[in-house]
Length: 206
Image 1 (cartoon, helix red, strand yellow):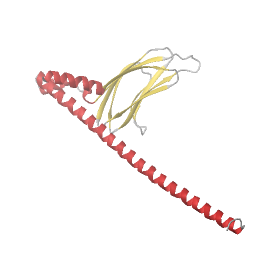
Image 2 (image 1 turned 90 degrees about the horizontal axis):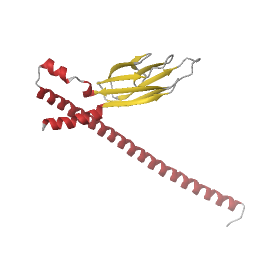
Image 3 (image 1 turned 90 degrees about the vertical axis):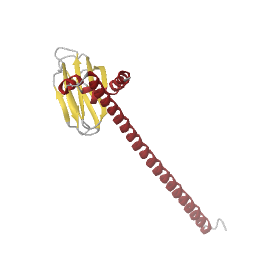
Image 4 (image 1 turned 60 degrees about the horizontal axis):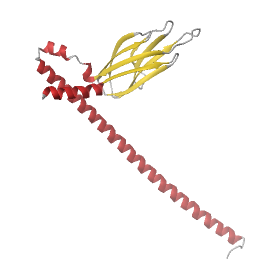
């Protein structure tokens, strides 16, 4: 039963925390991948780019404030890692650079990222703590379940914030609509009274 539950949570955890993407990078352009990441979470990744003589690709990882968390120039194949300090939207950008005298060729970029529980080496933890295989599986199961619960709690919190924002916006729109109607009614009443006085002054009406 434990192994079945562990297998299920492992599949869910991998779907939740592991991402793999491959894309085509046009010469002298950049492409960024963004994701919301919780605070104090380790992010690890591996990248590989197709080699084109004379062309280079740089990568940079940063947050919404522009703080650079990881950066490297002239990449071909390698790994990177960084720790998220706060809950924020983080982006990983790949930048293509081609000399002016050279005709650029598109390059393929492959990226695999892991975060949270997927970055842990449970084999190493088991050896260091002298845990039995079943205890290692239970540790992995506990971490996966905690990670999923935290993610769902965060999603629920964001849903509540969005709902509160929508309710406040609807209230403001309603008040603005009522205020606009009152202004229009007041303006219409003033126009009627003004025209009535004008016509009376011209003796067009009694």
